[in-house]
Amino acid sequence: QVQLVESGGGLVQAGGSLRLSCAVSGGTFRTYTMGWFRQAPGKERVAVAVKRWSSGTLYYADSVKGRFTISRDNAKNMVYLQMNSLKPEDTAVYYCAADRDSGFSRWDYEYDYWGQGTQVTVSS
Image 1 (cartoon, rainbow, N blue to C red):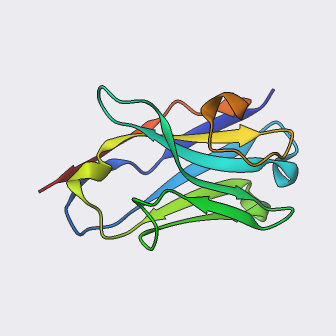
Image 2 (spheres, rainbow, N blue to C red; image 1 turned 45 degrees about the vertical axis):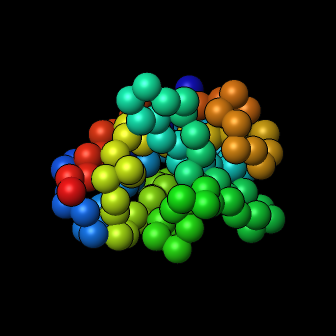
């Protein structure tokens, strides 16, 4: 059984940084495409960063390009989202997700496993 557990969210002032972590257990972590999604109140859940490590294919939402970075540590089965220069509009619940078929998609329905989410609040 695959489990994803996010951590690292919190309250930060605009311009600050946070690093979200996602611990992955119970599956073949190295083969998964991993994505970070976010959902703001009253809005749909959208992808902010996706990476298929087998090919190096990478996606960032336009709104986060140059500010967010997705990375992983294979030895620890961890995926990270480094978020810099945070803005109030980055406020959302952030989710880590895994695609076991190693696809490359921005659509949340393509992902098989999800974490519980972590709240990020950016104050102005």
